[in-house]
Length: 486
Image 1: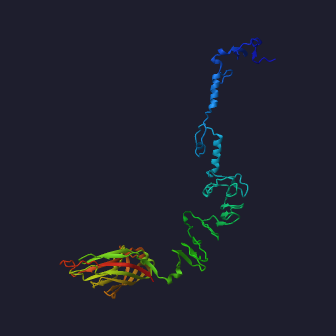
Image 2 (image 1 turned 90 degrees about the vertical axis):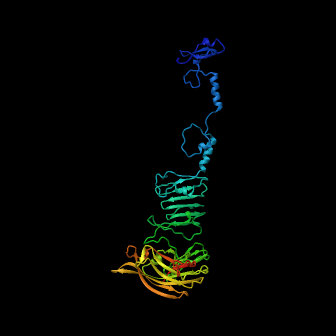
Image 3 (image 1 turned 30 degrees about the horizontal axis):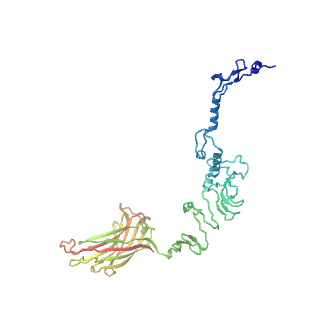
């Protein structure tokens, strides 16, 4: 019989004494000891791990108080519903906070930051599927930024009610609402469906992923929304134009900002509610082409008692005279002359007031001349208040050659002088070769040229030595000037 047990002497059991406690002695025997005389080394504290120690009532109360107070640190909703990395704080999550966290996860936008791969990719139409998105429908941008790489297959998003479906393939993307088959992409590009198979469907079809793709907008109702409301096409090539508008029927009511092509291939545009034909090269002979036209009144004015001149200069664009090497032009002006713009009284008025228009070379000369006069009107009827006149001068531009090489533009015209009644009193024909300031020959398209309007007055006493000259306040108003290409 084994004796490896704690033993109690029978004689001790028969004493029947109160306030006793069993204690194991050094020999492993159980002995009765007085409970009131226990030593501290006979019982343990709450952090003791030594075998055989007893726990008294005081330490038991400490343990009970700890259990009743429940001092565990609980995490709050803001501490659980986060996207940032946190340090370990030894906080615990209650059932309520766990439920709230799960609701937050389900209602948060679905985003991918890592590549989603199908593995193994063994089926031709294999998809990466994220199902049961509940109420958190991902936006179009979030779907596109998913970073999906499924061996050129796709990604499929589906809510439990089948109301939102989208699919990526190696050839495009589709999104749709409605029944089964809605939002299933084809191999031709992008497809959008609504409520049923191919109802309201639009295909944006591509040819192949080469340097140029073609987009077709078929006969479907609705509006294609564009970011920032503009379209930028690919650059045209020798084989493909950047934009094609097919022949069709013009709208019954003109649409503001529309460009249309009729059944004969004629282009029309609409603005301010009026539809107008866009002129083509075959219409050139039916219209006069204006190479330049002034937009505001140009004014030169005098305020002088001696012989004086005032000018107003307007820079011409390069195509006014140099849109081609050979041109027949008509220069036209509409002018108003203010001759006697104030009372002379008893003083001596000017003998004449002259109104002139010149061509001015800014970085060139006309055969060495910076200015060439187009026309002039010398008025000796100095008591006339105002008059309105127009002038027309024919101009011919050509290209001069040296050793059969075209080197310089030439300008030929007849300068005109008008009398008090608007009659031509003088005509002088001249031809000028355009030269740079360094003497080299240049073309009109490379030169800077201006128009200069002048008004001048002359007195019998040019410098007013006798102090008897009246104040001349003549004004030259050029309401409009233009160059017509004939």
